[in-house]
Image 1 (cartoon, helix red, strand yellow):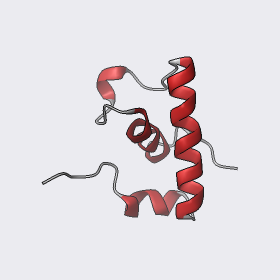
Image 2 (cartoon, rainbow, N blue to C red; image 1 turned 90 degrees about the horizontal axis):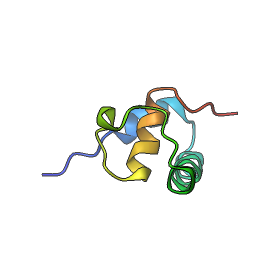
Image 3 (cartoon, one colour; image 1 turned 120 degrees about the vertical axis):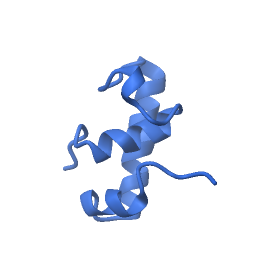
Length: 66
């Protein structure tokens, strides 16, 4: 069984809309792909792909939502 990390429930406590969360995560994952800039060390991420890693950054409070 695949477990999604971080859970959508935790993320929706931080971001008030699923649509906003998708927008933030997609923009951040594109930045990761283009610039190879990560806010955590590579071995600290649970996810291997940039989209999952961007959601982890949202959960950890590393991305400021305006």
